Length: 239
Image 1 (cartoon, helix red, strand yellow):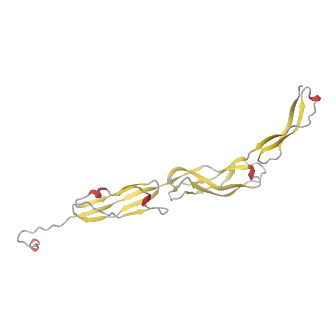
Image 2 (spheres, helix red, strand yellow; image 1 turned 180 degrees about the vertical axis):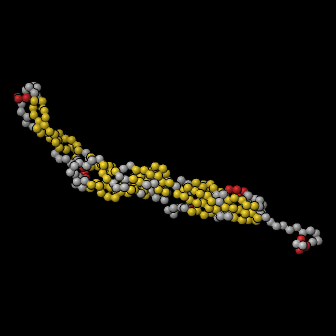
Image 3 (cartoon, one colour; image 1 turned 30 degrees about the horizontal axis):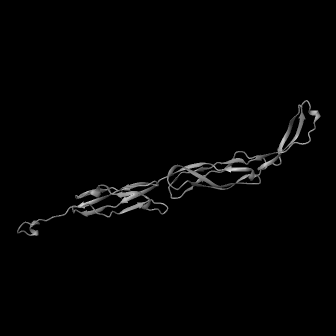
């Protein structure tokens, strides 16, 4: 027989999110050449899912910072919902946004995670919230490594030290133990003769610190030698 179901409107039992929700068809009719030979008693219900509508957060930005030993990121802007809230739904954005770098170390374009925001209101369970994907850079902190001037009397040997070194710029209670390499002292380390010799600190590197080496001077003075001639006295040499 030529009979088919036509028209009608399918509707969920409610508009809220859920799995395996009942769907009913109303207003359908029979049509076809033999439609008059049949009567439509009922339409079997179907099941389907209503998934949360995805929303995102707009309006936030994150600032670059200088390395300070922690992963805290500074956010700016006013967060707002983006993606379209269904008209009439009771929904708002709640909380205070905070940011955290992926690791405290210096680097460019580091991912920043955002937390502290959530959905509020009677319709909140019908939506999902995606936080923004932000990134910013942590630049190296300035660190000065300064070596003090030194002096010695010529003895035919290199200066044995120790050198007086000061560090200025460490953050978060860090010390020189975080630096990589061995501190060396340039030309003065091998200087033997009398004169002025540059003490040039070098040899240290760091991922998190931009090191500025400030050198000093090793002053090696001559030895005054008095040679007495046979039969003379020291006062004779003085005139």
